[in-house]
Length: 137
Image 1 (tube, helix red, strand yellow):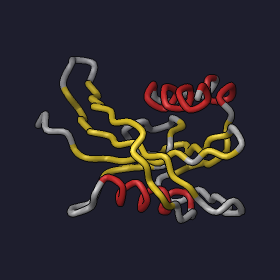
Image 2 (image 1 turned 45 degrees about the horizontal axis):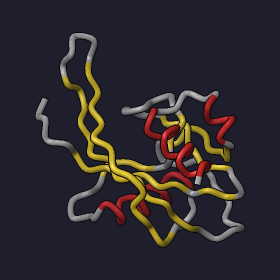
Image 3 (image 1 turned 120 degrees about the vertical axis):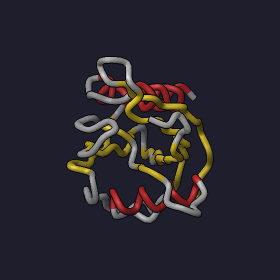
């Protein structure tokens, strides 16, 4: 596999100490809880991709994306072969307080979770790291 990373973005929406997560249906991170997000489309900026993916997976139109962190994410097969390589841009976003999240696109489930609940869920290390940093701030 080519080692040039593919651009991807995700978005963090936090309300009252709870974070909106989706249960992913597709790789990478299939069957794990994560921030809504996905691959950038041709010509999209990372922020545009984060907002589009967030709306596709949650039904919520987010706004005001602020870059929080970037991750160089590589997945490998059991034999060490590179299977995926993404440069993930993670954004903090805002949304209307009364907006209702509905699982859509490749999100099998959706919900609001506290830091303690997230620690007990199957989540990528990057998700837990972001939540812990925000909760500590």
